[in-house]
Length: 238
Image 1 (cartoon, rainbow, N blue to C red):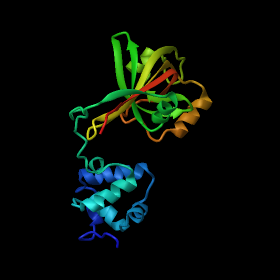
Image 2 (cartoon, rainbow, N blue to C red; image 1 turned 135 degrees about the vertical axis):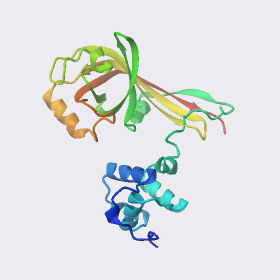
Image 3 (cartoon, one colour; image 1 turned 60 degrees about the vertical axis):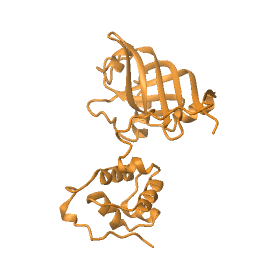
């Protein structure tokens, strides 16, 4: 049985009544390349209902939210925005907790599951840690920045088409589960340099899913070639 809206959406109203749920639903759907009709088909809804949820204030049932979140590959809290302002890591520690090392193959697999990480570099002003959107280019970690940013200057980047130096840097990603008080982190340490090879640049631009979230003039590709990849996971007895 398909879900239908209580009233037909008024398309002339545009997105003036769009809520946080509607924005999040539309953004995730578009990021996955799904049409409204396709998303509706996958979760047992009509495409017009998906349009209604995206464009109007609505209060779908928890069952509807669960089905939508499952198809979109996120949690209900992520879909509704309930977790947006939540600071992770505030739950109490569990008994019998231990920190166990991760093997390098698992660390590299985990690097491929994320899209945002933190790059740590030395700058003339001191150490800096900056969040960046990234992708895996083979075994390298690639991301875009500005030639005049702290990260760009740390590697001696002269500009998008200029010469680029090399510097040591570290890159980190992690995952925290407040419900179970568990988590993991992966650290990659190696040489950071600006990418200047035209063929590599074309490949990176074609592979990138989107522009950097920070916006602005961030067209200088940087590449970290890890010399060491390590990771740790917090586990405990249930």
